[in-house]
Amino acid sequence: MKYGYGVDLGGTTVKLGLFTEDGRMIDKWEIDTDISGNGRNIPGDIGRSVLADMQKHTFQKSDYLGIGIGIPGQLWEDGTASAVNLGWDHQPLVSELQELTGLRVAGDNDANTAAMGEYWMGGGKGYRSLVLVTLGTGVGGGIIIDGKCLRGAHMAGGEIGHMPVNPTETRQCGCGNRGCLEQYASATGAARLAMEALASSPEPSTLRSAGKVDAKALWDAVKTGDCLAAEIAGTFCDYLGRGLAMISSTVDPEVLVLGGGVSRAGQVLIDMVTEKYKKYAFNACKNTPIVLAELGNDAGMYGSMANLL
Amino acid sequence: MKYGYGVDLGGTTVKLGLFTEDGRMIDKWEIDTDISGNGRNIPGDIGRSVLADMQKHTFQKSDYLGIGIGIPGQLWEDGTASAVNLGWDHQPLVSELQELTGLRVAGDNDANTAAMGEYWMGGGKGYRSLVLVTLGTGVGGGIIIDGKCLRGAHMAGGEIGHMPVNPTETRQCGCGNRGCLEQYASATGAARLAMEALASSPEPSTLRSAGKVDAKALWDAVKTGDCLAAEIAGTFCDYLGRGLAMISSTVDPEVLVLGGGVSRAGQVLIDMVTEKYKKYAFNACKNTPIVLAELGNDAGMYGSMANLL
Image (cartoon, rainbow over all chains, first blue to last red):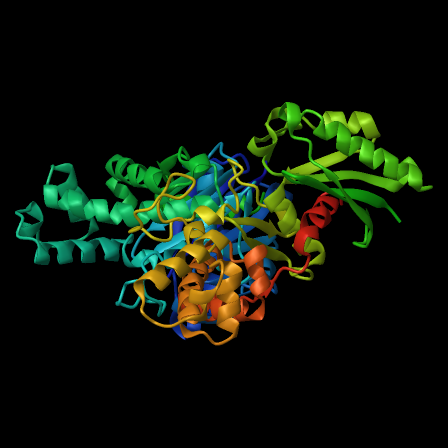
């Protein structure tokens, strides 16, 4: 049996997991992400944390497949990494981790890594291809075909949050364009759709007395049978279903996996979005299953480990 | 040097080409497609035509890489093929061709094959990934990543003509959905957009005296500086540019290649669609080149040969 470390590097914490090659997580822990000094301590902190864990076990060095790492930015072919939120601009990452630990290092963007995790041991386990759509503050995504990540020529493979789904939108997306999917199908988008509906409709709704109108409040209201909330969620799912149909007409994955904070809404989200999806999807893809991600915040660690295999 | 046959099977003619492994077409010819009797004679006709050609040359059997073939339908994993226009429903194709000729047979859908041809020796030569968008009666497509075709889980990879780009469309597409890209960005779509504009606008236009308002007449009028035609072409390119931006936000190819009859409009089409594309594309992909396909009707033969390599 071989072992490996799956690391998910985030802006505030680094999640580390020790895995077996067949997908069992033996241990996991976290360390703080030290973004001081343009994040120059991060590679060393991760390397030392891995080294300390290695000393707790009696495995040989040859028992380790290496360290996989997912980063909130770009990992370039020369092993340096860029990540605005960490202050990294071509920070040497692979070489530093390798020198410190003596282990092989493989890495990728965090969205791709999460997709790989769900493909290996999560909602996409057993399928040959998937697209993971992460519904968080924004909308991210990752595409896995036959076990390989579709990174894209400009590292924009799976950047589905920025598909132009609404040509008549006047508001700008964070990316500068107008009418991107993530302006609607994200937690932020859900909150905005809800606010707008509450302002423009006289209909009663439990949302009017909710302390905070966010994606969670919206889906909670849907589950209690609130009609206005269901209407808002329908709009949300219409955009998302259309986006998923666009994905199927290009990539045609075997399964579509929904992750991220908004996906905690659960089966009601799946049911509503599946109905909208069927309306827009090309015939051959109408029955592509839409399922929930299963690994939650551990997806990145799993995927980083999978990238060592 | 090795040789191979690249075959492009269409509804009325079969195009056959003899190629060298390094991409030179030595010879090409056509035979009629005999769709009588549910197309049962087609495999034999192709096999005999290849055999007759082999007898004209002094190559050894081992000098041939085989026969590549692109079909207007699905080639299943068991080597049978289905194609409505040929009357084929799981027609044995690979086995029959192999038995007749003694050569290895490899095949794929014609849209994928054309994409592979443009990747190998056409507009996408030298790039590592491309999406070919074929603007014909409908809109087809094929996706090549690192030399491999993205076929999709339901053989719908690259079915970009059926991306839902207009949620408010009331007319049905041939596929049964409403608002598919090919309702606008095809030859048929161009003609319809033109007719509608001519009917609703009082503006003078040379199109009003054109015998037939089709895609060719539209682009010809654009080239003479006809303002209404330019406006219609702008609408056409807006839909197409949006579709291309969606493709880039998922697959992120190194180059986007436009083929099919409408692409004969040439550089003016490229210029107009590039401007619209830049408006909708995600930042990282805004400079993805959009180029013309180069192989015309030979793309399928080239791609079929490439599938033998």
